[in-house]
Image 1 (cartoon, rainbow over the protein chains, first blue to last red):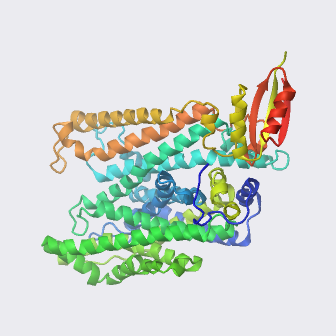
Image 2 (image 1 turned 180 degrees about the horizontal axis):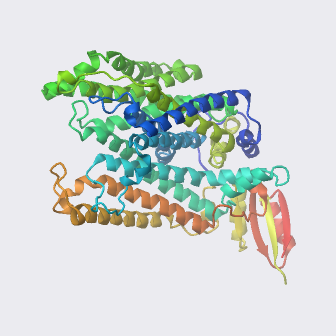
Image 3 (image 1 turned 90 degrees about the horizontal axis):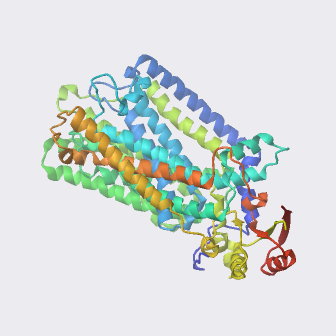
Length: 459
Length: 173
């Protein structure tokens, strides 16, 4: 059995038997939704509908419905895309990298973090799809034999790398998530009585693939999880590196920098962990998971946010230094304009929310407070959105000819699509919280006797 | 003589692990163990062979890498070579740095998916499959040991009780 130091704080509070864990995890699925769930769900649904209307309008009339112009020809769409992809990074980091490092605290949060990843990446994937203008031709991005020449996709292009990276990341995340879900669905299946709730019994029988928990199956399960973690780890780093190359391989001042891949990956982890905190702090209350998602988990995540936030800050300063040191006046102006030009306020929001406020986590009282963490995690979400906005829009809006200089202002449709994806994300997440086992209970049961507070006190 | 099946049910994985060792030391074959979560060391105690899942992943990864390289070579070098941004397109080797990201992604794509499919097939898991666990509580908090016996049932029952089984059920063949 896994041995753990007695000084380590327990990861599961209260005296929980295996059966208690089963009951607690099955509770949101078996019970009725409370008032707060319905309020949140209705709000999200309204936002989602606004998004659907905006997307339909965009597809019907073309992307002229957005606030883009000849100078700023890439704005909220790609900002939102990168923002969602970034958010989608924490899930796999938690479940894969922390599994490789044998971090036990991941077990209470990995399921929801992976759900967040999958829903986040799904939102991200919507943006390039809409931006195509004719989404029914989306299959053009795949290397499919055709009668135009044959006109192939360009394997030299980072945009195609992105297609492969994101579709691989999305599908591998889904598989990783599902492999872990099978035993937990089996737990739910066995809790439902076929006479009392036949629909649920059938649903979870179908989803659990006939899992029975044989010794050989568990042995394979553990090996498959480990190998998937090993595959997903370089995948996480590759995905956001490739997203950053969409910018870095161009020659636009402010984008053409070699620091982009590590800087984007760090930013992604930073924003992903912030979103995990935002979601989990709400979820632990709404579905009664206080014993499993404890302040200790939040503190560990806050430490990662502090680290990645400081590294992102270092990257910002490195960028400024390199633009000055390059001696290229276009490059120098791009950064001068970012910090002091008409978009100075966006730059200031980015600096404040990403570099300054996370430094508050040096204080243990803030690191160990749910309310402070919740507020600061929202700050990070906002800051990271502005980071992408600053990188994209400020690099474009003042290009080589001053006569072409302009500003970007979003239209009602732009705003609708962005908020619509937030709504869609929360709709998916709220439905997930009521139908899925939100904590990887099988894994959690294996650490109760080493990390549960009751067993720790007995020693 | 007909075979009987005994189900020893345990409450604790540590007791179960000790019981498995003890029973196997007495030259009694354990047919199967069902548990709600993976128990470390159980596969060794039961004498299960090491799983080859990781090896399959390696092979699938190699297939993915080769197919990606072959696809890109055919598309970018043989079928329709183009000068894109002055990148060398005469040989695969010279153009390869730009192809690495997709070759890597395809490696992971093939390894992860095909290994997971192999895992499901080897475990006999498929959508709508039916669990053959003799006791539904094994996904909750009970650990079940299945033993097929010919002959002395009482002695085996004694041994199960002695090693810590909290409940013993019997199934006639």
